[in-house]
Amino acid sequence: MIDYLIVGSGLAGISFAETALQNQKTILIVDNQSQSSSLIAGGLYNPVILKRFSEVWQAQQQLQVLDNFYQKLESKLQIKVDYKISILRKFFSVEEQNNWFAASDNKMLAPFLSLDLVKTKYQGINSPYDYGEVLQTGYVDTKLLLDAYKKYLQENNLLLQETFDYQSIQFFDDCVEYHNIKAKQIVFAEGFGLHANSYFNYLPLDGTKGELFIIKAPELNLDVIINTSVFILPLGNDLFKVGATYNWQDKTSNPSEEGKTELLARINEILDCEFEIIDHFAGVRPTVRDRKPLVGSHSKFSRLHILNGLGTRGVMLGPSLAIALFDSIEYQKPLDTAIDIKRYDKKM
Image (cartoon, rainbow, N blue to C red; front, side):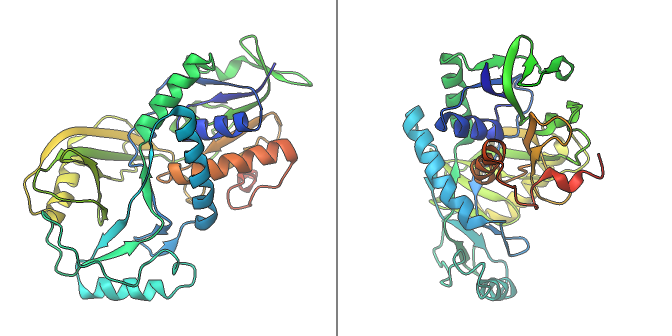
């Protein structure tokens, strides 16, 4: 018998898997690789919601957990995935500068917003109003991380590559059984695939499609991440990841002409240099109407649990939420009411 059967191997799934393994628990992951949002994610971590100038929920705590989590994964997998790099908000007016300084007076945001304007002139970007610097930021190379973790799982016979059959779960007093696999607990971390999950699909997971480019821009000289209506992330060798769009109607993972047009328009507002589109990606983010994750245990089937709804902040939320769910299951530590799926019990 294993301790945890985990459904999904995106950022949520591997965050929980690694948390369980670090606590000497046995695991098996089931995944059919149908969800791509973690693979094509921007991977940025940023403690400030710049659009509204508000702090990300429990930002400082998440950043501390994040540092430790990815350091251990880098050591385990012998790869480099966590890059500490500044995020600069390009200002388009004096009014935007004033809004930045007003926000920095907020005691919750003060640790994350620099009071010094960045006046560096980056080749390829016209910036007459300079930039504001967000502190304690960076990005995780999600594709490299997930590919390397999948290889680790395969080498250790910890990955079952198939579509999970929810109807095949059998319940017993001391365990659940799935296709002759006995497990003490099942954790569902299937992202937008939650809609096929008959145990948890009552939860209001909307899903928001996002599209990104990889562009080549030899004239663009950046050693920071630029964040305005899109982010521009330097990858090296004149390549940059650029994104992302938000589409609440289209739930497919196919790149669209509409998304391409929108991204091109936004890029052209920022760059004044030539660029070439090298690749175009799309995925459906697991987003929730109240903008809070979906974490917790089923009210009727106590051995079934969920870790989902990480939205655009999977690299930042995943590690800390995995620990919260693990502690809830193993030690009955109450979850924060903001993330606990009990907030939707009436809907069920």
